[in-house]
Image (tube, rainbow over all chains, first blue to last red; front, side, top):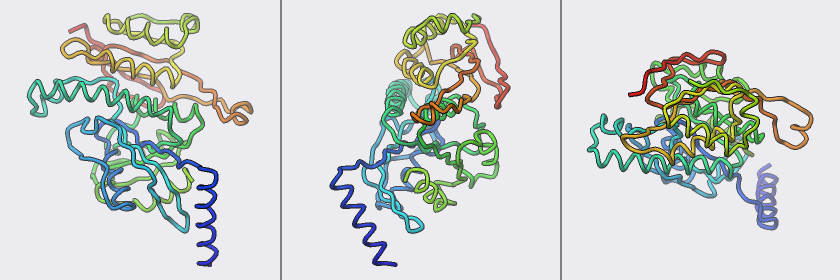
Length: 211
Length: 115
């Protein structure tokens, strides 16, 4: 069996080189503070050994999209190589006063707000250049946000695969079933990106959906 | 508050529609769109909104729509492009329109006078 697996893996690699097949580009999307970068860090630490970016309890910590090419995920005998794009949190409004309430000086808050608006624009532009999306939702929050509705609609319009990660199930008031009931047409995995809970199930689903 | 008919929306090109909405909302109006926007138009509206945000002036929009419905046509399956049915949508300035509660078929919102 090992010989057959090795042959298949080598053949797939040779096929890819010969026909220059690009890796699937998967965007990690969601509202601010849903845990997108925490998940991106978890995936990269598990499969490449390093991290994607810094995380913070203050919204819009990620203000530039970050792309990591060639992340190979192996699960249940399957192997999939992806380009992963960690995107800034999508929002329809950004008020610098929200950052001031978190203790920032006015100048710093305005600068962060300006960068956050640019980040949202970048995230929206990336939507047109993806092969699939992992939509991260905070399982302690209402899932029917406009950002979630818009991202799901864009993937459905293009017939592209979408996987919902119901994050923060380590928190007591989390309710992943609310998310499942809200968007039953899409696969959902309840995870804690912070603690790694159910992360292997997520990898299996990633391989299934984006492979 | 302006209630915009499906016919009026159909008369406009996507770019005109988004421009019309952003201009009206920036002037303090709340719009109820009978037909709503396509997912691409919604994404475009978010993008334009971000470019218009100014500290102490305009902090963005509140947009409320129901999840989209898909028409599973043979054409869509053949060409891997689904037809999306858009639904009623409410859009207003973020400082005047606030979503209180929302589920698949109900949106509850609070509208306040201009600050």
